[in-house]
Length: 341
Image (cartoon, rainbow, N blue to C red):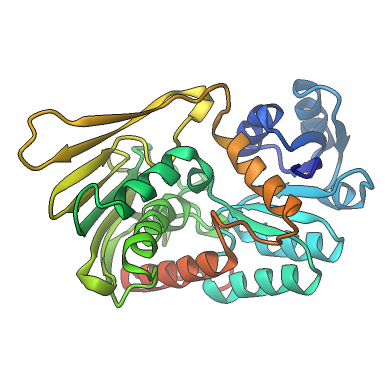
């Protein structure tokens, strides 16, 4: 039986609201507290989500005796500090991505969780969704033959605003860290499943950095994994591009229209398999069955803890650190530096 978890949310922004909205649909946990640097913000959030205690600081969430797991979701540069402080307080941790601005800091966060024997997972929800598990099984069963090429992209088209967190260097802005991490983790997930290793043998990235902000607005990269597997990944904050993934093999290809947010807000999804010599695609349907995206993520935490594990198979510490190293390389090749942030 899964652990019954009492969640505290640290931050009241958009992603925190999405997590709180989905949490009641999980099997394993419920929201009991929220904290913000602003008491009015915490109280407004608490009113929206029922019988929830409002705290006027993150410290108060960590001091709340009923809270045994926290969801950390302030801007990127504060993730590592609060992961370490939560670990020291003995709270289990789900931390919004990216765990850190750089690999070295991600190592510090993971080491703190291990030292204090608390659960830690970087909050990528899509690997926790049944669609992703089915996709991996299809590939392992040879649905497209031998996998040769992965294509994955995540872009949004925002109007440029130097004060918005996606463009502001002081807030860890830039497309690579904020959304490029999705195609990066997707490529790694597929490589691990079919090639046995998620670490690329070669990686070449490029992109455009706004000289006024020092943050990247769009970027692309090519990675070569063991077994000849190649991945093309892309992201952007000011460019219109589809948010999708495709996997090509020797006998066909898979089209994944919604790879990174399957089941968002209870939406049903579909994956299409195109086989050589067959005119019609085979469709695999994924009805949400009343369980939205972030409820699956919360249950990945609860289920792991019920098994006595301090990391989740969907997003292990090794995968978080491997991704951080890959993003370090991408940022360096594009020319983004978060020194001093």
